[in-house]
View (tube, rainbow, N blue to C red):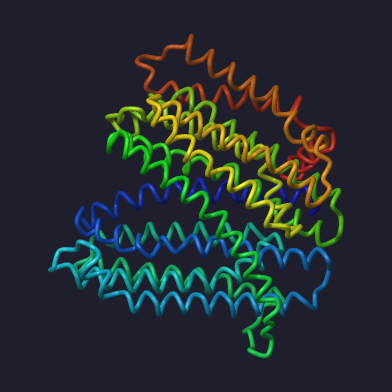
Length: 506
């Protein structure tokens, strides 16, 4: 299988996995809520949520072993793969055990004093607390093993494991509806078994197929390498922190000036944005290993070309879903929520457009991780995202409308996205115009076609009360935009690769 074909297969696997898991998750949540009841479901949400806040550390650390393992794969330095894996496993296990001990020490003050849990359900809250702590530990341990699969571009297997994870959670939800014991305690313990299943699924396969997988020995511990990992992890944590601070900071600003109604609209917009963002990141996750391997092989021309393709297709795949949603937001929110909170349509539209702008140069994120020059990148690109906070506060302080804050949010996202281009020019001598010509200019016609199609359908087509017109808008816009993409946004080699994949499938 060629590199281009592998990217397509991995992208399709990511898409399929995410769509299946979103559907399974929505139905599982409904069953769990019915089985536990609102009180116990609220206990699980608030107790597990306290521990889940630490997951941003896991997410920040996850890209580190992927980066180093992919670099050494690309450089064909097989002797370093085993040592790299061993040190990553030692580090992740150590951090996971450290968090477990810290959480155990904080259990009593958190569950009995900090959280408002009814006295007769405190014991169940403690079960949830320790179960979520163990799940966090298992997640830390699983990260380096899963990184082996990403580095080897075996995303199909990881997608299968994640779909099995969703199926198991659905089976647990069904089982809870007939369980006769304390369902909250049972649910929290069964989630540990799912984490154990994920760990075992990755470990067994890796043991049989990947020579660098082994049980780490302390003699392999390399302090200098651990310091290098920490440097990468620290900047990744900073990047995640900027996004978290911006999200929560805007929520505080809206609450300070307008109250809970606007916070409700903002929360809905964040859920909608999160539900659609998987499409864009599917292509990035599929292409990141090859981008990093190109850096390991000292082939920056290919690295930047793949980064441009990742950005282009991330925008196109995101836009083909997002633009119809923006035009049909009132009907979609009405179907989903029944009663639409005030400002929800406006918030969702602005935040979806902002997420699309972020994808314009998203491929350069993987390229920067590969190059390893993180300081300038984070201080420029991710700090720019924080500009929305002082700008938004100033707008409201001057008596401007809520919409002005959203325009400030949109502007900060545009500045952050475009800053990636000159930063990569500075740290890796990337040709800026070549990137723009490859990644951004081909987007103009497809996006215009998508907007024009959706505008015409929503302006001139009426189907009853238009409650379900978004199905027609979505299907027609996908067909029209797809034709324009294939005709104008792809080059000859891209079309040839796609046709070869179709013929091979047939």
